[in-house]
Figure (cartoon, rainbow, N blue to C red):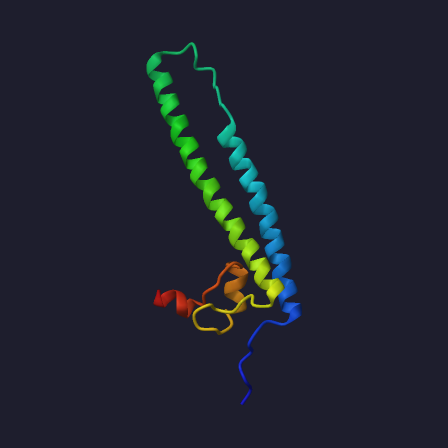
Length: 125
């Protein structure tokens, strides 16, 4: 009986490295857009409109900035998680479930490349 695989091969790790680098690049671009939107004053020329409309506009602007701030925080966490996955690739511990010690299936890692838990371990949480 063949022993279960303990880690992914260097070739498999390279596949995941490329996938993660691509995701980091896209995530950083998305974060930049979010930060630009957050920093943008967005004066839509409501200075000469009625006070009621201006109040609605300011309220909407505040909600939009809060939403962008939350999205930016989530994106920053996603990037940190991806970078942590890159460290695990370097250490050759990538794809090993931190609870069970078994390999996380490739399909799961392709969908969630920063995963540290197998579905089995995640369901037990």
